[in-house]
Amino acid sequence: MPVILQSLVALGFVALILIVVPLLGPRRRGGKKDENFECGIESEGNARIPVSIKYFMIAILFVLFDVEVIFFYPYAVNFREMGIEAFLAVLLFVAIFLLGFYYVLRKGALDWENERLKG
Picture (cartoon, rainbow, N blue to C red):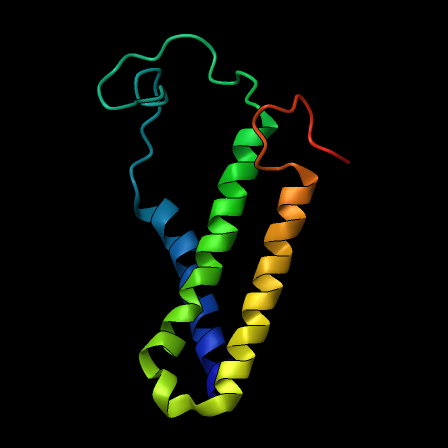
């Protein structure tokens, strides 16, 4: 029940913010206001230039493996108190982690020299 209540409060807060902010915020429109702004540098050209899929693959894989590493922290802090069951769970987690990394390597997602990713 506490989880459901907290979820309802969070969803209510999000809904309230999404409804109230546009009503209270300024409504000025104009060419200068709607223009993109990047650190004081004037925009030039089209922002929709094609970017290699390899860039996105590296970014997604970085986030994926970075988040996985975060799960090691609680174990590293409490490894003595957690016992052998936690150690075996971490070994299983590392095995799955390495299996995923092996899959990424086999698919060539980290190989910048390939013209296309392997299918």
